[in-house]
Amino acid sequence: MNMNLLNAEPAPDFTDPLGLLMACHQRMLGNCETLEALLSHIETSGVDEEARKAARNVHHYFSTAGMLHHADEEQDLFPLLIRESIKMAEIIHALKQDHKQMMEAWQALAPLLARPNTIEPGEKFTQTVMHFCTLYRDHIKREESDFLDIARHILSSAQLKKLGSRMKERREQAAEHE
Image 1 (cartoon, rainbow, N blue to C red):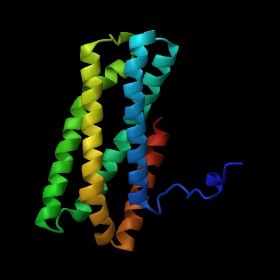
Image 2 (image 1 turned 90 degrees about the vertical axis):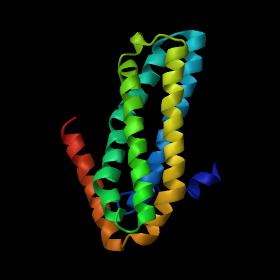
Image 3 (image 1 turned 180 degrees about the vertical axis):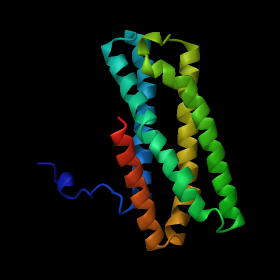
Image 4 (image 1 turned 180 degrees about the horizontal axis):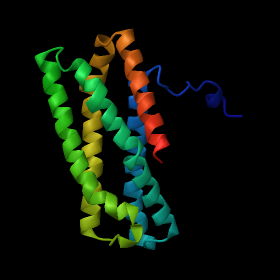
């Protein structure tokens, strides 16, 4: 029996919105790893059923949970903190610029992943994937080291509760439209 399973911490939920955002970062990084593995797979096996399934799964994740994650930050978290200090405003500005670049990279990648049969193996697809993954990794590193730890110390319990409620509402609304 795997004893680590018995000691595993429960996954964060809406009562820990910052923990939930960090857990989402881990899923984003995992999807980036899947994308990079997809590059190798396509090189050796082409765009077979396994590649199509992986592409569709990554597309679904970033088109749903990924977009909700950015909305959580842009619409609810950043406004709570932008007036805390000039340094915090600068960090938030940089994170928003990251989001813009990540969205531009996603717009180049998403149509290919949505229709994996259109993927043409080669340098262009590889560069598109690598650019996207690099942007996400750099952003997550900056956000976790420069922003979320500070946010955790600044936000009150009431603000965190409201943030968690808004995140939950956003997902419930998204589920209604699926």
